[in-house]
Length: 509
Image 1 (cartoon, rainbow, N blue to C red):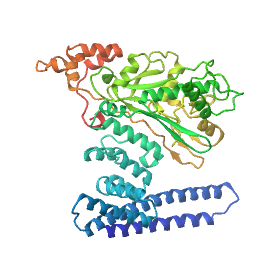
Image 2 (image 1 turned 30 degrees about the vertical axis):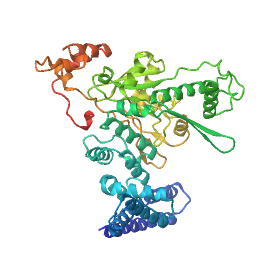
Image 3 (image 1 turned 135 degrees about the vertical axis):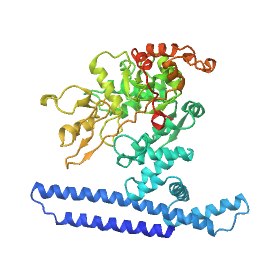
Image 4 (image 1 turned 120 degrees about the vertical axis):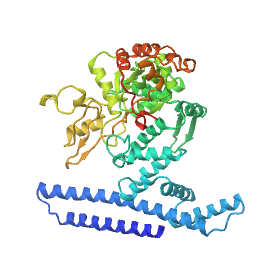
């Protein structure tokens, strides 16, 4: 069976090589001398690169099949293990053989064997996508990582969300294989956090015990200093340091933003009045950092335990979000979401100026610079008109993007152009060759609606055991009163509900 699969995979790779050869020959035959043939030549080489990338994925799938097949054959040939020590020795022998054949370390060989086992036994959609060349080996490894410790149903749900277009709640935006692996890991981690069978609050409580500061010497008289902290603390430190660094930038400052961040952090931690270069930091007013915290309103009230979302990080425990809001943290802006579909509904009430609110909405909608693969979450992303104001473009969310400075320059100095956006979807991009690249979309999800709250919205139920309900729901009108305080106008919506929303992955179950 495995031999046949390997032969089929080799035949597929040979077909890819033949297709690539045709592309390259066509490119070699293309003349040069005017824009038409040169454009065709460029297109042919890009097509060749895309085909080579698919070949890499198919070769990775072949390696996975062969590795898993050898592991199974080795186990079948081995004598029954008489003890755990014998079993461990047999596994070591298999790992050593694979390491020697591939000329890699035994650690890398062991990881490949484990990944091959997961892909061929537990992740059929991922394996199929890898064999078809629609995702890369990096994407497949990320899927293995993000399904660790999930039960079979959870792993299948995560796979389906990203790789099955017919899933109940498929991922929005471009396909998983068109995301840079790092961005795919970010989205997969967020989905895993939202749908993990153990609440994020419980997992955070356990992980909180592991907080630490680490020091590692490096070359050239340098060293690494890193901290493992709760997400809200880490995000606040990063944003405040970035804001202070940006305040120091100017025509007379030759340090980069990264260098300024490092110098400021060192000065603050060591208690110096100046930075390592001798320039004063204490006298520079630090602009207020702006961190968006997206909170399902029912979670804010303590009715559900849905995670909140920290801008640039992902899901955080509800108590952490409630604490940030209750303390009135000036650096954090509350974002409430619509209970019907999870879309952002209102940004903190401290922002009244339209331009400031629009910039915050762009941060919320785009999540980062919308250029494919860019991970820039910094506050200096720039609001940019998709259709220029001079050409009739309006200053509206649907006509704005938030590219980072690098990709803002790319847009205005090259033929790269952004494509249409919507209120909740960032713009894509069109390259000089005419290819369209979709932007990554945040996956908004409808909040969980407790059945008790739905019944309170429809009227009292004499069968309810009020003593077992959250305090906000023990009185028929109390929960709605709290919602009305949190966001005026929601009470009429709740009181006119006709049917509860459908259950399923889209409802956060």
